[in-house]
Length: 438
Figure 1: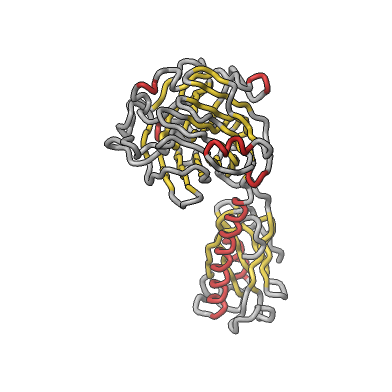
Figure 2: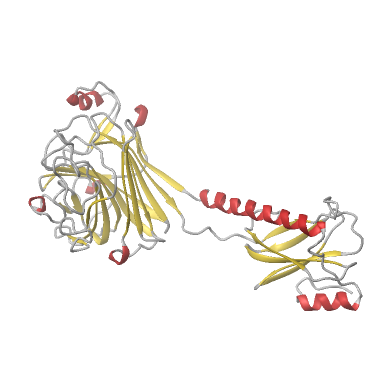
């Protein structure tokens, strides 16, 4: 009698009964104990394979790399400067190996390390670099390595990260270099108030047809009297709306953590003040699956760090996949430093794995002596199934059950032996569509 591999389990049992040939290996036998151990190990291997496959989907785009004398600019970009509310094309300013010492010597440092100087050594200035990128819908991380050569008594106001701008009045092309439709916190005279925060300095706010995220690490928070009740760290996070380019607003309003008037201000844990010449690594990650922002600023010379985690809740809707503008910048205020960049990159991680094709799955069967079941008397067969799939396989002379056309998923495997009578032994396992052995 020929079995249809996709016949129901009931039909299989009836067939075996009709041939007085029905049994499933007893759970008390050595065969099943060994098989169970093998399947458990295989599940662990498959989980590892899923993790590896997901990691391999990570996409990193280096925007700028000047470390160790390199001069790499990876994507088209535009710059914008601001001087106390007035657009300025004097900065950001690139210092290459032949001119870098003129930047470093301002702070009494001798070096030819190239930098992209975002702001000059002066108060109420802001500078930013923007680029375009296709967002694939998962988490996105912006990483930068930064520095400065000179400071006032308290270096301020640090670095800014821009996420998910959707400009309609400008773009990433030469015609908009230093001419982005924008305003700034100084231009709106917010720096004279507590809106959105009394610790912020001058920050550029570009035009965008949809709300975008601004994250600022300001090292003057928690120093020189720059603190207040509810301020625990050095980070500001704002949801910016500026569709016209000159009339921005900040959400949430009022401030959920009660610091300043809008946005989340002075949040996080840890605080430090870097020294001239220190390398400062900043990473900010947005995860749409939880609508959460995380950030870490680390002084690579001292190991000090400041971090935050923030759930944006209903104040921000996770963006759909598509083309967006991202950016990094810096600002100064009453206190200041000549903040500069050495490295910038974006990393994207898909939320889900790409679809996988059908594949084969092999299960090895062992005898009561713990050896491959190549000489077991009678017939051994397996039924692999879940709610949408069922396949029958007979053990071959090498002791394997081979299943074909198996999509990724969670399955139950039942093993039958024709020389005994008992209930089937069932094992639950997951097949990832890549690992051929269970």
